[in-house]
Length: 98
Image (cartoon, rainbow, N blue to C red; front, side, top):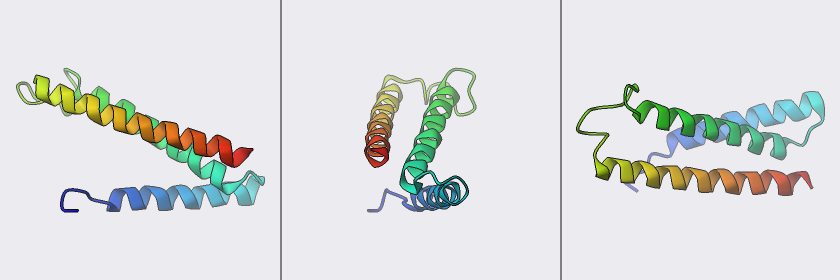
């Protein structure tokens, strides 16, 4: 696992779990559902920012680097992976609420 950094994911899960537990403590809403909904919101926000920054005029746009067909293909692949994770989290949130 040389290319995968799990530290940001672990931090996001920990923060979402803490906030989800706080939501349950103060509102009585189930902690797992609150955690999953929070993770969905964070991932959707990240997906929007990722695509917006790679567009022309965006923060991460580099002419000749991020606008090549190979880079666009990798961006589409990353979008599909993140959308699949979001869909799985939505299913988990609905299932935990039932």
